[in-house]
Length: 134
Image (cartoon, rainbow, N blue to C red; front, side):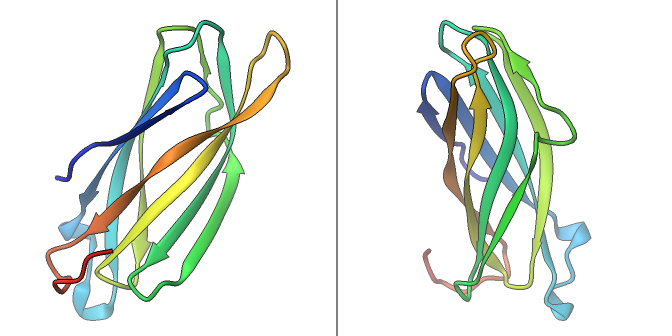
């Protein structure tokens, strides 16, 4: 288990923790899998809704995948002030380490104002990596 990474943008706090999944990984075949748990908390004064997500997933060779999609885990949650939403997802890489960073594309339902919330960069580390730091 790794540390929590968190950041707050426009009153929305995003916290992420990643976990290496040894049982789903096959290092001898170049397959490494992580789960990550995200908590999105509305610390502002107005309701917000998560519409879309953008991820940038970079492996140990510096190759970056860009992933875009509606909502998270099939949902587009509306968070009233003080509410939070948590979900778990995952990603495979063909290197033993990497990192992820991204944005949630949000809207304030009352005003229709859209804004982006930063997802803090977090590392994907496995016991199979060398001594490098990313």
